[in-house]
Amino acid sequence: MNGPAPQPPTAPAPHDGTGAPSEPPTDAPEPERSDGDPPPGSGEAPPAEASKETPPFILYKAGEEFTSALGDLTVWVSGLLLPVYGREVTSSAPWCPRWWEHLEAVAQFYGLWMAWQEMTGPGAPLSGPAVWHRDYLGPVMNSLRDPSGPFAGCKAGRHREKGQPQNEEP
Image 1 (cartoon, rainbow, N blue to C red):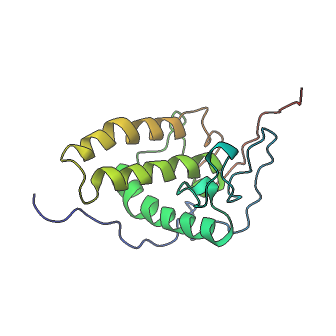
Image 2 (tube, one colour):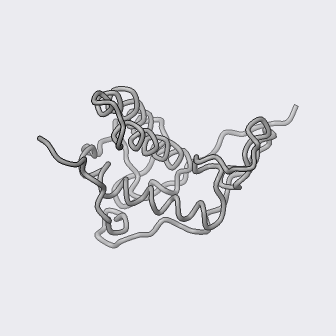
Protein backbone atom coordinates (compact mmCIF):
# COMPACT_ATOMS: atom_id res chain seq x y z
CA MET A 1 0.00 0.00 0.00
CA ASN A 2 1.50 3.33 -1.07
CA GLY A 3 0.83 6.79 0.21
CA PRO A 4 1.67 8.85 3.23
CA ALA A 5 1.90 7.27 6.64
CA PRO A 6 -1.31 7.57 8.67
CA GLN A 7 -1.33 10.49 11.03
CA PRO A 8 -3.04 10.31 14.40
CA PRO A 9 -6.46 11.91 14.12
CA THR A 10 -7.60 14.55 16.52
CA ALA A 11 -9.16 12.44 19.21
CA PRO A 12 -11.82 13.23 21.74
CA ALA A 13 -10.89 13.25 25.40
CA PRO A 14 -10.20 9.78 26.76
CA HIS A 15 -13.11 7.96 28.35
CA ASP A 16 -13.29 6.42 31.78
CA GLY A 17 -15.22 3.35 30.65
CA THR A 18 -18.60 4.79 31.67
CA GLY A 19 -19.10 6.77 28.47
CA ALA A 20 -18.43 10.07 30.20
CA PRO A 21 -15.34 11.86 28.89
CA SER A 22 -12.64 12.59 31.38
CA GLU A 23 -9.75 14.98 30.97
CA PRO A 24 -6.15 14.55 32.01
CA PRO A 25 -5.60 16.64 35.12
CA THR A 26 -3.72 19.90 34.81
CA ASP A 27 -2.88 20.22 38.48
CA ALA A 28 -1.86 16.69 39.46
CA PRO A 29 0.46 16.65 42.48
CA GLU A 30 4.02 15.68 41.77
CA PRO A 31 5.57 12.86 43.75
CA GLU A 32 8.24 13.77 46.28
CA ARG A 33 11.78 12.64 45.51
CA SER A 34 14.82 12.46 47.68
CA ASP A 35 17.39 11.07 45.24
CA GLY A 36 18.90 14.45 44.31
CA ASP A 37 17.16 14.64 40.95
CA PRO A 38 14.51 17.31 40.41
CA PRO A 39 10.91 16.07 40.62
CA PRO A 40 9.27 14.79 37.41
CA GLY A 41 7.41 17.52 35.59
CA SER A 42 9.48 20.23 37.31
CA GLY A 43 11.09 21.35 34.08
CA GLU A 44 14.55 20.85 35.56
CA ALA A 45 17.05 18.50 33.96
CA PRO A 46 19.15 16.28 36.20
CA PRO A 47 22.48 17.94 37.07
CA ALA A 48 24.51 15.80 34.64
CA GLU A 49 22.24 16.82 31.77
CA ALA A 50 21.73 20.48 32.62
CA SER A 51 21.88 22.67 29.55
CA LYS A 52 20.38 25.86 28.16
CA GLU A 53 17.69 23.86 26.35
CA THR A 54 15.01 21.78 28.07
CA PRO A 55 15.33 18.11 27.03
CA PRO A 56 12.37 16.91 24.96
CA PHE A 57 11.31 14.19 27.42
CA ILE A 58 8.04 14.99 29.20
CA LEU A 59 9.37 14.51 32.75
CA TYR A 60 11.66 17.52 32.23
CA LYS A 61 8.74 19.76 31.30
CA ALA A 62 6.72 21.85 33.75
CA GLY A 63 3.59 23.97 33.82
CA GLU A 64 2.03 24.81 30.47
CA GLU A 65 4.80 23.00 28.60
CA PHE A 66 4.03 19.76 30.52
CA THR A 67 0.26 20.22 30.06
CA SER A 68 0.68 20.81 26.32
CA ALA A 69 2.95 17.76 25.94
CA LEU A 70 0.44 15.63 27.88
CA GLY A 71 -2.36 16.87 25.61
CA ASP A 72 -0.37 15.94 22.51
CA LEU A 73 0.43 12.53 24.00
CA THR A 74 -3.26 11.98 24.82
CA VAL A 75 -4.19 12.61 21.17
CA TRP A 76 -1.65 10.01 20.03
CA VAL A 77 -2.62 7.41 22.66
CA SER A 78 -6.38 7.87 22.12
CA GLY A 79 -6.26 8.40 18.36
CA LEU A 80 -3.69 5.85 17.23
CA LEU A 81 -2.17 3.64 19.92
CA LEU A 82 -5.33 2.33 21.60
CA PRO A 83 -7.50 1.95 18.47
CA VAL A 84 -4.74 -0.03 16.71
CA TYR A 85 -2.90 -1.78 19.56
CA GLY A 86 -5.32 -1.79 22.50
CA ARG A 87 -6.07 -5.31 23.61
CA GLU A 88 -8.73 -6.78 25.84
CA VAL A 89 -8.46 -5.91 29.52
CA THR A 90 -8.06 -8.93 31.80
CA SER A 91 -6.73 -9.56 35.28
CA SER A 92 -3.44 -10.62 33.70
CA ALA A 93 -3.35 -7.55 31.42
CA PRO A 94 -4.84 -4.64 33.41
CA TRP A 95 -5.55 -1.21 31.98
CA CYS A 96 -6.40 2.10 33.60
CA PRO A 97 -8.98 4.31 31.89
CA ARG A 98 -7.21 7.26 33.54
CA TRP A 99 -3.70 6.24 32.45
CA TRP A 100 -2.44 9.86 32.57
CA GLU A 101 -2.74 9.76 36.37
CA HIS A 102 0.10 7.22 36.46
CA LEU A 103 3.36 9.11 35.96
CA GLU A 104 5.12 5.88 34.98
CA ALA A 105 2.59 5.34 32.19
CA VAL A 106 2.96 8.94 31.00
CA ALA A 107 6.74 8.53 30.88
CA GLN A 108 6.63 5.19 29.07
CA PHE A 109 3.96 6.29 26.58
CA TYR A 110 5.86 9.49 25.85
CA GLY A 111 9.05 7.53 25.18
CA LEU A 112 7.05 5.18 22.95
CA TRP A 113 5.59 8.15 21.07
CA MET A 114 9.04 9.73 20.61
CA ALA A 115 10.30 6.41 19.19
CA TRP A 116 7.21 6.22 16.94
CA GLN A 117 8.00 9.63 15.49
CA GLU A 118 11.65 8.69 14.92
CA MET A 119 10.96 5.23 13.48
CA THR A 120 7.95 6.04 11.27
CA GLY A 121 8.41 9.69 10.31
CA PRO A 122 9.95 11.21 7.18
CA GLY A 123 13.44 9.90 6.65
CA ALA A 124 12.87 6.79 8.78
CA PRO A 125 14.35 3.57 7.40
CA LEU A 126 11.97 1.18 5.66
CA SER A 127 12.46 -1.25 8.54
CA GLY A 128 11.59 1.48 11.08
CA PRO A 129 8.03 0.31 11.78
CA ALA A 130 9.17 -3.30 12.29
CA VAL A 131 11.91 -2.15 14.66
CA TRP A 132 9.39 0.04 16.53
CA HIS A 133 7.03 -2.91 17.01
CA ARG A 134 9.81 -5.26 18.14
CA ASP A 135 11.97 -2.96 20.26
CA TYR A 136 9.50 -0.43 21.65
CA LEU A 137 5.79 -1.33 21.43
CA GLY A 138 5.98 -4.85 22.85
CA PRO A 139 8.25 -4.08 25.81
CA VAL A 140 6.36 -0.92 26.81
CA MET A 141 2.89 -2.46 26.60
CA ASN A 142 4.07 -5.61 28.42
CA SER A 143 5.55 -3.48 31.20
CA LEU A 144 2.50 -1.25 31.59
CA ARG A 145 -0.04 -4.07 31.40
CA ASP A 146 1.85 -6.46 33.65
CA PRO A 147 -0.29 -7.59 36.62
CA SER A 148 2.21 -5.93 38.97
CA GLY A 149 2.69 -2.86 36.77
CA PRO A 150 1.34 0.65 37.24
CA PHE A 151 -2.24 -0.33 36.36
CA ALA A 152 -2.44 -3.09 38.99
CA GLY A 153 -5.70 -2.63 40.86
CA CYS A 154 -7.29 -0.41 38.19
CA LYS A 155 -10.45 -1.73 36.56
CA ALA A 156 -12.78 -0.58 33.80
CA GLY A 157 -14.38 2.62 35.00
CA ARG A 158 -12.23 2.72 38.14
CA HIS A 159 -8.81 4.21 38.75
CA ARG A 160 -6.78 3.19 41.78
CA GLU A 161 -3.85 5.29 42.88
CA LYS A 162 -0.76 3.17 43.27
CA GLY A 163 1.31 3.64 46.41
CA GLN A 164 4.99 4.36 46.10
CA PRO A 165 7.65 2.28 47.83
CA GLN A 166 9.00 3.79 51.02
CA ASN A 167 12.46 5.32 50.92
CA GLU A 168 14.52 5.92 54.04
CA GLU A 169 17.45 8.30 54.18
CA PRO A 170 20.80 6.74 55.16
